Image (cartoon, rainbow, N blue to C red; front, side, top):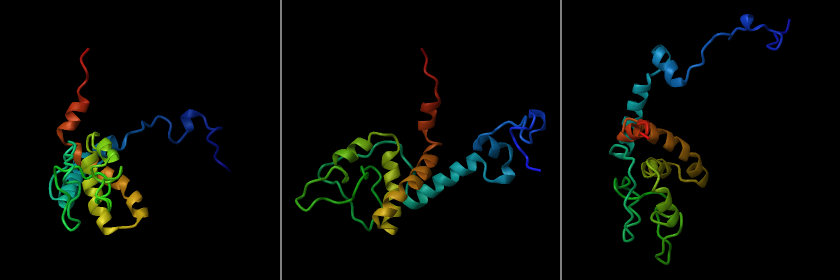
Length: 163
């Protein structure tokens, strides 16, 4: 006999009456199935700091036109805008998607974007193809924004506006 959900009365449906939980709520109520949300955030903060050498910072990086790159063999500087390609064009100019370029300065305005670029730069030092450059953006964002969640940024975003 084929079980048809359409033919099943709600009281007989195997999922009837179950409350759907967000992953946060589920792990909070069932820590035996994985890390609690607090543990996951602490692990992300530790992972970020282990990779980059300092904690995640939601603030934008500085845009110094005389210093748009850093040595490849070092970790990205903490206060510098490192969004974009870590290079200067042969004629000495800065292209749109190079560090310090127009695209870089635009993305630098978003909270946490510069922090994402720090992890991404370290990951792409290991995986150097254009494909891996594109594929590693989302994991870098996930790690960074999880590491940023305990930061004061969360407090600001969770405060309800007073009208």
